[in-house]
Length: 133
Image (cartoon, rainbow, N blue to C red; front, side, top):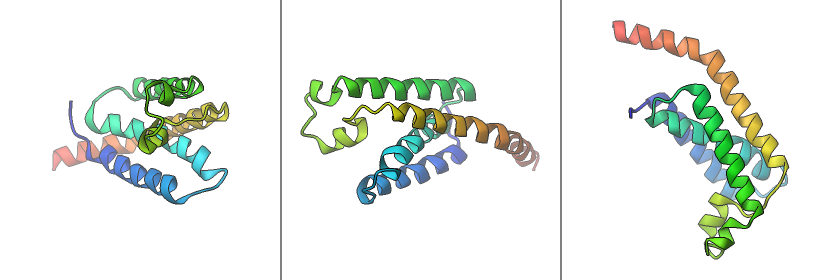
């Protein structure tokens, strides 16, 4: 276990964005699709902020987790767990199974992998330089 301020910064920023979307955005695109796109990035950055797991393993794990949650929505997991009256549970877990969410999750993880591949070498160079100072 370790703490990475870079990933924690992104976790906080994405969390604030997700809360804003959940509370203030009532449309047919940003809330359902961008929210799902961003939530996998949020989960990824949260894990990377506190654990030193490999990038690809973390990305695949987050993608599989998001797929599992979506499948559980199909089986009305919120109701099965007796949390149907909890607005927080309904918002966090979700209540509606939508096939398109699998695309949003996949695009979110693809974005993570692309960003990590592009930014990663620069971050490593910055880390080396900061250790030398």
